[in-house]
Image (tube, rainbow, N blue to C red; front, top):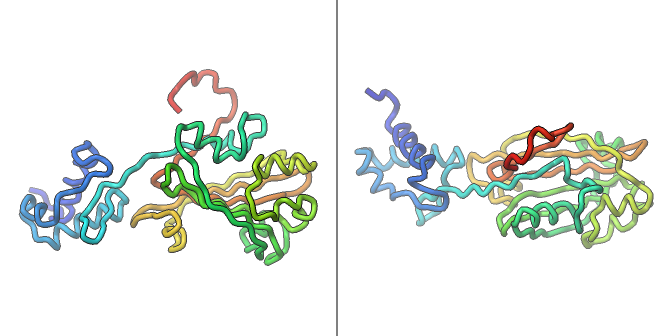
Length: 256
């Protein structure tokens, strides 16, 4: 005898059917009324089971439209090659990587002068609340919100590389631009974390209930000091990162 609460039985059965492809991504689930008849349960019980799947990020609900299985067209980012100046690319790494994957990149962009928060100031080794140049991108893959990228540059660097403060994008990418004016990034330090999104992040990335964000902080260094701190916030359900370290000849042509 199944001792689980009825709403969990509903959730478990529907989860199995989603996993097996009975309800593929983008499809609509039966109505609450139909599910009530199928499971011999009240609509409130069915709704509780459906809300479990919403909180897990498996389905989404729309007023008047019922429940839909969320699409998960995952984009895989190779973090080792990202911004590698020896890797062939035209323009910035985001456009190149997305285009090479056969997907369509679009983005909105802004530049502003802003006080560096404690997190950024610590990584740039500047005084807290000192002015930083923020270059902020809201990025999409195939018109679906993919990430936000906030790159902070210390004020002293903007004096040596004034195009950082210009409102438009830098066609060749900022890392290439800085190298061209004699400020070469020779290394970086990455930090990766996950958490639930803030309300602003959920709005910008169109994140449903139960879906976390992946935070990728990359601090870039010249020979003697940090020159930028980039905080990229990804939708946790649509992104995967990988790194290539050492000799991978034994890996052969495994799927990427």
